[in-house]
Image (tube, rainbow, N blue to C red; front, side, top):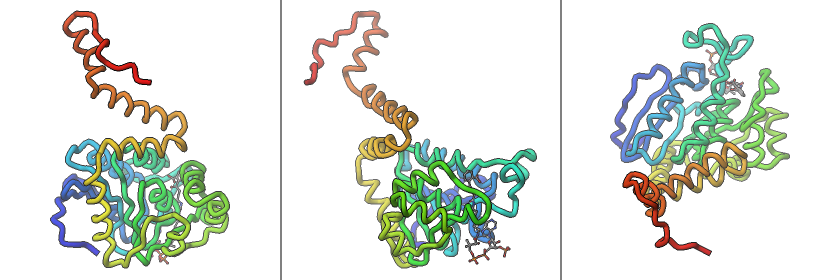
Length: 276
Ligand code: S0N
């Protein structure tokens, strides 16, 4: 499944692997013995790794995946689920539902995030791929929700972003019936962008990443913000407005205001057009 790229590993993580090559960051959940189910520690580390990738000016695209070819992620680790969320040695005995923070972080990351899915993307793991910008699936991928079977549900992105992606009727079917869907069905439903043989999964995903790296990073940033803003309401508009301010800061017109303040003079905006 891996191709001959010289991935450089960094970070001191227990549950995940962080690697970079040629402007691409790859973040891998590394708990194959539990089909890459996440526990609070996994999510703390994922949040850190996504932050590292976002802050690294060399990184233009993030690939999010799971170790091995059996699962992308099987959701919350049911074996450490307590009575008020998930508990491990990093949670001070308090149950956590901290996958929600990661979902928001993926949405707000201004760089494209590609889910690279081999095997199961199930439960909270399915929601994570839905939150990613693009999904490339191996031909062995299986998709589905399990909430009503195992006593959980995701009424946030897991519900309405899924409905936006595949339509309301199909989102209801996926959640209510807890069936599993193969990669071809997911492709037909618009749940994934491409399906490739398992042995070509990383090669294809890296190819998509390289194509993204050839594009204007600011245009991609604005498009991601625009496409998310409709679903994310005020929070999405706040991010999009922040990006508009960033673009304005980069203009001579805004810089005239800054320079005039620093030079203790009246700003001269007369040379800037009053655009129709
Ligand atoms: C994926 C399934 C269908 C694969 O079946 P298969 O191929 O028969 O393999 P298994 O033998 O079942 O699995 C192999 C080993 O992996 C362990 N394992 C698999 N999944 C999990 C898991 N989620 N947690 C812990 N362990 C897991 C198996 O137990 C087995 O190991 P051994 O043999 O040692 O026991 C099948 O495995 C399956 O159905 N898995 C469970 C899928 C599931 O129900 N996931 C949880 C769904 N719920 C969530 O994700 C919570 C939602 C959520 O995160 C959330 C939403 C909104 C707000 C907050 C939250 C939050 O919780 O934070």
